[in-house]
Length: 96
Image: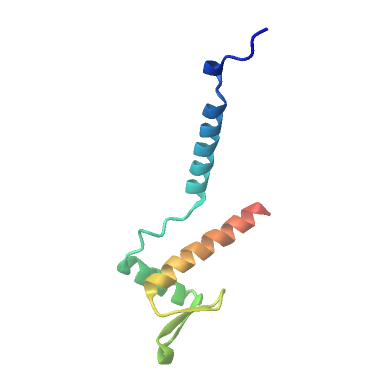
């Protein structure tokens, strides 16, 4: 009895499909921070200051993200960090 036909082997197709699915899942779960321009960052940080999530420290020229205790000297860095921090917190809550 002859062995399996090597031309009918679809295992590589299955592996490729699995890799593509994992990549799509990872992309869907990630937060896009590339779209944070200066105007968006300033608006977000202003909203966070109003919501008492961020504390400005004028004498040190920094903004402190209260939940994490992290200080930033750039509104863009803070906005990107907060988006990632929020996404991670939300992902943790969904996992529970």
